[in-house]
Length: 338
Ligand code: NAD
Ligand code: UFG
Image 1 (tube, protein in one colour):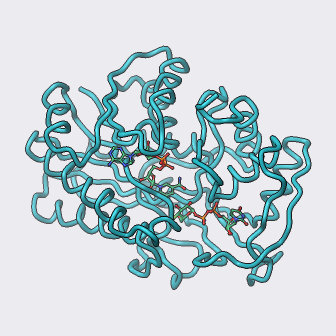
Image 2 (cartoon, rainbow, N blue to C red):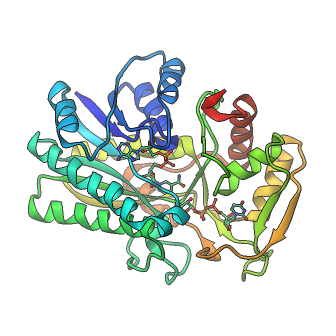
């Protein structure tokens, strides 16, 4: 029996493949490489010394997906496949709804017709919106997303809840990620953004290897300790291990359970810059510029539920994240395109 990983060649997917293989699971991967490449999966094989099948497949392609289910014995799905750029989603809402929601609908239909009713879904802290107070707890009201990307996460959470209401044989875990950063300690896999990075850590690592001149910090006039935004950065390997716990959970029980995957600690942008400098003994020049539209001042998790029910807790600290991010970037200055 295998775990089917959609979007497994991506940043979080590839790290999760490593942890699953190392925990002894068999896996099958599908990805259309819209934001990744098969080289990431070859490197997963290299790290783990294990082989697995992977398919170039768009999850909206019903017959291709069905063929994968028929060719393999799939017990459960971890569903990473999706588009994730917040800014781009505001320019291309239709593409985001089509890919993320349309893709999920096809996936769920194919799962159902093949008798597979266990799924772990990549949701996001973005579903907490701007009206809740930190730390965010799973019981808080959601529904105030401010961009189409976030709205796709919210809708898919709702669709999965409805699937269970209609058929209580389904077993669903919704994982709300906070800010995944860092890379596998081997430096063989990591985050590989196209063009100018939108996110903080890949931008810093590109400055660190001289690909960008300096970091632009988006605002220092927020109501926080140093005026810059606070986020809950979580090492991608800790996040990947959270998926193993979620898979164990859906094997045991039906229902819908929601878990925050974060450290529970908030760091400011300046904290990240200072920690990165210290951990890697390198300077990161920066300039303070205006606020970025849509940013909230603070976002961090209450991660108690995942500890209590899944026995999961993030183990790595911000220094580990900064060191591992730098290790990946310096070994692969052009990502997988070296
Ligand atoms: P990523 O872009 O690296 O990985 C997503 C993968 O899905 C890519 O390999 C891409 O090629 C693939 N994909 C996209 N659409 C597809 C389709 N229609 N068919 C097949 N494959 C498709 O992103 P990531 O950071 O690894 O994120 C994984 C998941 O976690 C996404 O759903 C994302 O929205 C969610 N998430 C990410 C973050 C973050 O900060 N990285 C935060 C919260 C949630
Ligand atoms: N930032 C900068 N300069 C940069 C990049 C980011 O100052 O060049 C700042 C941002 O303004 C923000 C902080 O760094 O204050 C973190 O920004 P990121 O873009 O790294 O992360 P976000 O918290 O904005 O977004 C992340 C994911 C989204 C997800 C969201 C909530 O990228 O997909 O968390 O879960 F929706």
